[in-house]
Length: 300
Image (cartoon, rainbow, N blue to C red; front, side, top):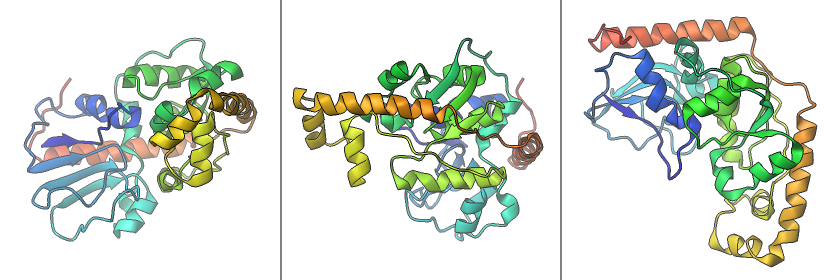
């Protein structure tokens, strides 16, 4: 069975959890490079462009709307559980398949110790690292910046050590919630990323209220205004030359004030009973999958 997850030009914390978490939960010999069976885990990776002949074993993934819906009637899909009720509804699955995002299973693995002196932290979407200026905005705001392109252990330690996490990165919120760190979700720059947030929060009965966050530079302001990425050569040329510096300066300071305001609103946190029930249900589905695929020897 081949471990399959999204891998972009830069590492992304939520996706990279696949490369570490599953090795604590599954037998040592569970994964190989045989593409005839694909293990589809953490991420919005239920999509239509997998090889038709491959068997797809879905363990806590979600549909994100980034591709067309897959045809799951062809007999090659094995759904153990999915991220939330909106994924289940979109695919026509039994609602009982909607447990929560697979990253909740971090609660059943060894964890790095909490980082010290974090206080309030902000974790942007990984795309905002290239486009935005969030480290500088956090410095101005007196808020700890968490880089979502760092290793999973580094990010988890900071999420565990924070008093409050402001999250543009959805898995920043998911892992904070799993670690019982209060969090505030901000409205993502692009509407395409929003479906998955409600999918996950619905799974844990969280009354989700995303908060607006002002852009950190001219490129992000342009992206918000136009609905585009803000990464093209034209917009880069405008805002990365001296003429764009006043706009960038103003945006950076306004973003810092926006972060400070967010740190004062009531945060989210799922109920203890919800997170414990979801963890137990997800673990049971993983254990059943291991039995069904013929290897009962758990790694230590």
